[in-house]
Image (cartoon, rainbow, N blue to C red; front, side, top):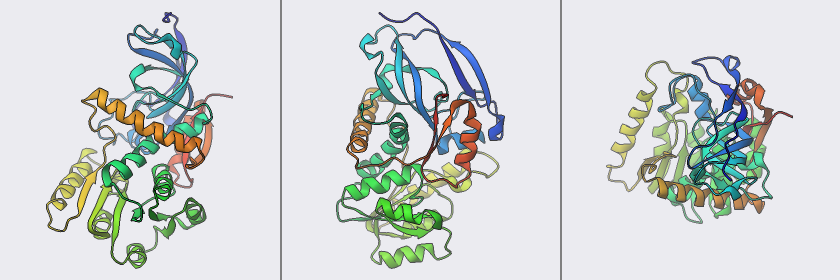
Length: 347
């Protein structure tokens, strides 16, 4: 039977452009799930760069304040709405939802659910929900780097970067990864050659390691350094940009840095050097919803299988209780951690 029972939910609300300690906690009754929906009890959610930008009102398509952040979530179905198989109840799934994950319980479209293998910990699965799909699609769908190639991963200690390194190494690709000096040993353990991103000659050091150029650069920073990333490519190489971290704290229109970036990438694609430049958009193709969901489910399933098999090890920086989401956000923004800050239910 489908559920008509309401569920009490604790939610973290982002009321406006506030410091992390300005987040608010509210408790409300969720309505019964509607047609095609389920109630998901949160087992793990997380802090990504998207929420950090949303706090500043700088995520390019965020909803108006106030809202509940939380880009992805792993949870257990506790109730199903009309048109949803009741057998989903009690099973664990991951979902990428853009907002709403920072809650003890939430309503999710059943079509967005991706099964999580029993042997994969909820926090580990959450760590690769968005980050793993992003890394997989950039490497295998956008750049299409083959075994024997060489790539550069900026921020190899980050949520996406650390998974990208592991996926690339598993595919037989050499990785040069930038990170602060304190994270070099861990980057080395992941299988990448570490380079200090603070070093004034960082790009020259990369060129010395790959004098003929690299097959792909994965750049989440944007800004002036994007030109240097482009110059690192060999003929036929691919630049994949997936963010504008360098402009995070800039004042003014949040869309402007992205529009400038789009313009630059577009121009580069017309240069006669065989190189290509792409902006990776997780949500590209969502207008064809069935195809988008099938692709996401397939790619996430492959990443989760690699986690289950011990080939990819999600890097969890900390597990923080839901009601201390402010502390989780502040920790993620401190840029002192390796991996992803995960929000979990109260003890």
